[in-house]
Amino acid sequence: GAGVSQSPRYKVAKRGQDVALRCDPISGHVSLFWYQQALGQGPEFLTYFQNEAQLDKSGLPSDRFFAERPEGSVSTLKIQRTQQEDSAVYLCASSFPVGGEGTEAFFGQGTRLTVV
Amino acid sequence: GDSVTQMEGPVTLSEEAFLTINCTYTATGYPSLFWYVQYPGEGLQLLLKATKADDKGSNKGFEATYRKETTSFHLEKGSVQVSDSAVYFCALSERGSYIPTFGRGTSLIVHP
Image (cartoon, rainbow over all chains, first blue to last red; front, side, top):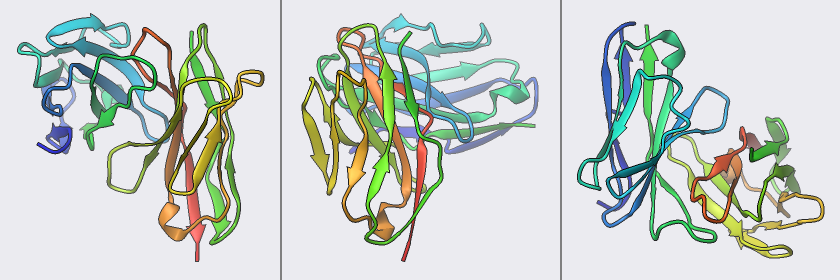
């Protein structure tokens, strides 16, 4: 596709439910990032992939959060046993080439997760 | 760790007014600096960037200069339009890190 695509755009989950958020990066982009954006805040880093390798997951807030990118393209962010504090917009971004000076990240529109 | 501090919003201006949004950063190395913009209902998109000291990034009438001595990257525009209403995010990425770090964003509202 022309840009980064995320689905679903909106998700309402009951507390304790598991959710899976999908990201389709721009074709050929090596790097993929997940961010969490709370209301009125900037994006907070969650995890980073280079192709299928998860090189950094230091931002994942708990072991309930898990991300994968098994074939180096589509990525899924999974949240188990959702809590109200997980309510946020989850952003996916991709970039090419791998890092380097001034590499632009291309963002999807995000998935707004509301835990009730 | 690295961090970015932006002025709090919302910034409310009349059309054709001069805009400044302040951004300062803390970094352990020599980062690249970015401004991203998020229009209502859309994803973040790159507005401009600078990769070394004294570089000026510019796009759509917006400018920002990489000031290493003051660790700043302030966004300016000489004459704003209603269509510039959006949330603006300052960001940095360290060389070799690849992971952008963002400020909290500054909302700009431009009235006709």
